[in-house]
Length: 289
Image (cartoon, rainbow, N blue to C red):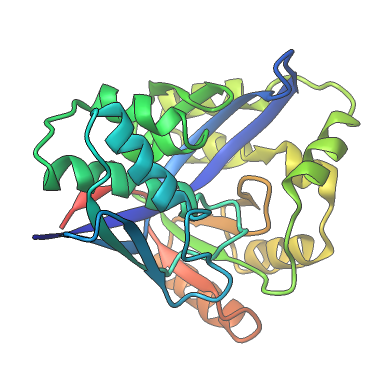
């Protein structure tokens, strides 16, 4: 038996790092949004008694280090099932090390897919419980849509949907960001009011100018990556309503009201950055095809 799932990318419309917690994690306040840029996950069962992974995308580990393998083991453990033979094929489109939660979304899709394959009838809340043990973004990738995420990012509150816009997402291929280094630089920033509070108010107002004026990311502020600054300038020169970095980087997204302007921007950036995508916001997370 086989199941195929779509695992969407996410962007951070706003991201505030509020400080370091006693457990070593950081307290976040962020608005996350899923977009129609997908990895495709195919899961099939077999009688090997092992979890195996295949992926042709360079740099993705195809062993137990892969988040999809971790998700599978966590699923079997939670459901008190012996580890069954499953093969997980990852067809990647979402760039890695980009702040787009590609890996987290793949892991979320595996939990959802195994729930279907093994007919375990887990509720979304139970799948989220498994996801929390794998990564902070995994619960959001199960739910998707537009959500305020707090704590380490796994406590979620649904917000009015962000829709009716066109997005351009661009990942520079020469930049990779160390998450540990990124947090060190964020910790050194001066304290400032929480921009995510303004983004939440803007989404409730449904005012696009307010929403795009509230785009903010502490990592973008702390890291000051030259390539990100350059891409963002190009986007704004192409008449984007607003632009910002996603996650700890290095992908940059821009919001357009005009589809034609978004397409022109996408075509222009793609000449230099092959991993440039034209997208729209979506209201769901991972889904079975």
